[in-house]
Length: 358
Length: 234
Image (cartoon, one colour):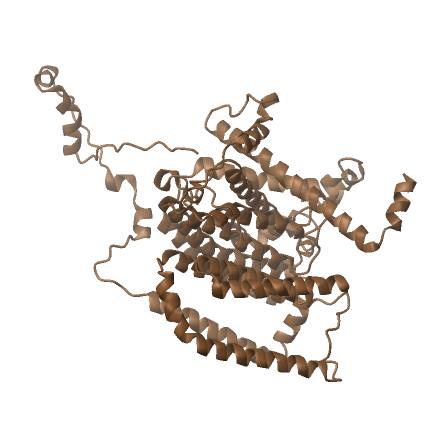
């Protein structure tokens, strides 16, 4: 053991740094992909139970092997490239939608110490990368050279551009409350129990951010980009096999990302809701479950799981929005709400009310 | 430092290649994708120069918003590339002239920097480790340059208002839904359930069978039930 440690210390610092970061990237990427795999299972079980069905139960114990069976099925399927399509863009489009969804995890703090890149403009980085993800959808729709795919791409592009603005404005409120663009500092500003979470003082912004996040990931009830009943499957109508699997992976990775971001911005990320309740402090000293009081990665995981559940809940509950109503909600409801609440927040901060009292 | 120099030349080379691709590719969608690549490369160059705020904002504004709208428009145009490129060659002398002037300005700037002793114009110096480009920009923008900043903001606001006014034309005869009216509708505004006495049996038996179910309902003002499409899952 000590020999390994010595050999490690003998390495130049650049090599040490690069290998640590590579290891962290691998860890987070594998974690996200596994989360995606099991959230498909989670989704089918949740929707199944809401519709009085059993859900997947054939592969492995309780159907837990289902995600892997799906992956293997998609991997061995043939990839069909339409004859009149733009071959290069057709192949590269799924990657363009997956890469930003994974790259954004670089700045997500998983607990007080674990973050791949602790950069100061983390919030801007996340905004920039989530806005780049739209290229995959648009290029897939265009490169396919099919009217259904093209219509799906058009709808998706207009929708994502519209909701991005509301999302950005909601985040302006968050950074005004936290006084920082660093995601770790945003979580630290919410430490000290559930009443310090931004959820309470920024509730309208939380609602706007979460619904815009659902619209941004093209999930039900905002999934008009796919709209099976009108345009077959929208932008990925001609994709099959691995190419379709990558689109699928990107969509779910984006959902996990939006859940994690909502948890970090409004629900205190890794922070515990019981902090500050000093009579519960004894829990923090029990090894193994100390995180319940002290906060840590399990809390972030639980919050992400809650928001993932809400995604599936909404999909099972709501009918699809009509397209003009989506546009109306984004431009005429959400943007004014965020602007008004930013003004309210400025007044609160000026008179030092609430979280700005100190 | 050597690593950074290698990175710089790598990014710069890809940037120049992408810029040439914008001009020379025949497909306008390819041109736009080259331009996106060029923006990413210049963002990387800014990151190397420790201007992370500018780099991220470049990606956020240009790649995330402006180029998406460009792509949106270009994809919908069915352009005849041949005829347009023939037209474009007419402006080639003008474009070359502008490019020449810009190259001249750049060369003059580099020459000015290399021959001076002034440290603010000299070679690039790395900033201390706790330097925060975002904070530094904010501190300057809201103090020293606050008037210029505010004027820029007002001009942008003016542009927003102007753009909205340009698109706000009321076409006559347009059928628009009043959403608040639609939402305010209650079931009793649309459907009226009327109680009727049961009809005697022998009279009903005389009538043809199909008619008896549907006709009285429509007379009552109850809309026939529409066939509901079952939701399909992928």
